[in-house]
Image 1 (cartoon, rainbow, N blue to C red):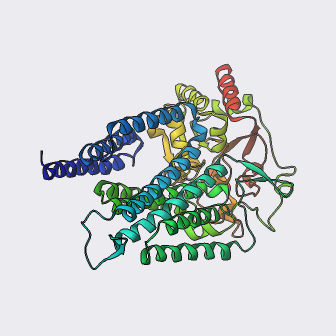
Image 2 (image 1 turned 90 degrees about the horizontal axis):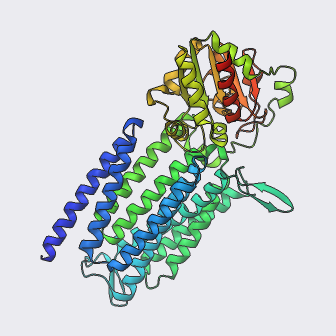
Image 3 (image 1 turned 45 degrees about the vertical axis):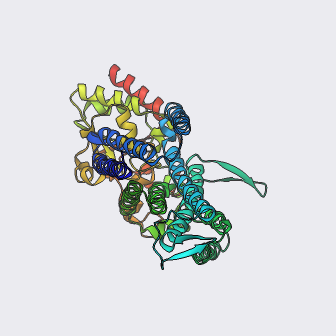
Length: 491
């Protein structure tokens, strides 16, 4: 088989992989087709990798099989061992791994071209000569972009994973939680200088690529830049940050595709980059905030000058028990359950399903109200509820459920806080002012399941907990639903 035939077969395989990527991405737009979409995407990646290693002759099969085995073992272990509550952290790490792979491949290509010369396919007049080799300017630009975006994605993702996992460390004798927004003095100036330094080094690489040293300087500076732009962001904004970092990893992969002249990598990276940006925009709209506000504001620092928790709660909070809530269910026709991160922490999704099934068996209509940024990553609640085999048609997005909430007899809020806080509508000075929320305060009766009156990531009290139509059931999420299920059975 001639080289031209091999090239044709590889390009056809890349075309097939690209089509599978596109249809797989389309499948991910709805829960019913999400699994099939994932399978199509995985098949597309398998076809792309197989075509590359077979037709490209890049590595011996020993290395290919070794890499396949190691990656498969690590992937299976992560899928089995990591609980669903830690999925956001794993997604953040995967974004970082994608960035690391991109800047390592681009750096390796630069080292090879400097050492051995170009492949001879470069265009005279648009290149930089290096020790007898010719490296196209467009390749140098792509290498620089891959190094910068990939490195900042890696370190930014590691910081994001630490915030999601609520890692803490000692600083100046004090315990510091990474989930808080860590604000350095003069951070904007420092970040701006670091970004400018990255651009200067990129220019040096393009103008004088005689050594790979500048590339690794760029990688180091971009890593610092990735840390600087991530540590000031509070935990409440992590769903947006994860979507943005996912976009960065795609852009880094796309740039690397131009470096190694790999069509399918360009297409896959562009798809990931574009979809990540679209998702970031959707998440920002769900919070009624701009991306600039997310990246540079201080959500999570508390409401300066706002009412204190004592002012909001003192003498107004009414507690209840599982037995009293069971009596509310006796006369209810419609019940809505609003899940939040507290449900994920307590791993209560199966207990939630059992109660919902029990109520439906007694003629009660049960629905689930899903806020776009509930939890720690986009779609976090959808993933948990789907894992518990709750039918997709029971999951109602915020915009769909809000107009009907006035007809709901009982709303069960489990572990959600900021996404049901009515001050987003009523207090223009609040840190979450203008953020669309699930209007559970309009339901006839609201039962909030929480361990305490502690605030959410926004750091402000929630007047819903002290509302006239609200009852507080202080308990662990899973334990509360188990007790509710037992009480309903006995009623």
